[in-house]
Amino acid sequence: MITQEISQLLGSDEIKTGVITRIERGVAIVATQKGGQSFTASSGLRIGDQVRIENGQISKIKKGNVVFV
Image 1 (spheres, rainbow, N blue to C red):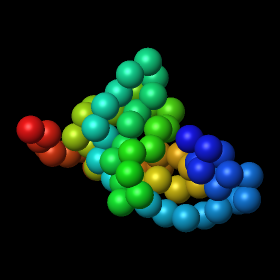
Image 2 (image 1 turned 180 degrees about the vertical axis):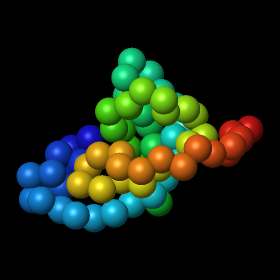
Image 3 (image 1 turned 135 degrees about the horizontal axis):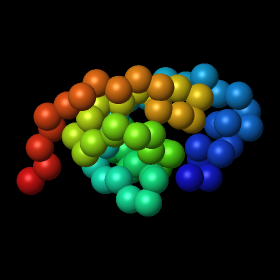
């Protein structure tokens, strides 16, 4: 969470991709190469969706069928 806030303050345009692993109380937990990160969950997001993260926000969604065991 702190890393995300620092990136926003610095104006980082870093692009990441990940998969939503959990959604609770309006927050989506996204598994990325750097570990789990939390983002505001927009309506329509589901666990297993593949997302693209730009400027600290979920920008694109590819509905996925990723299954967690």
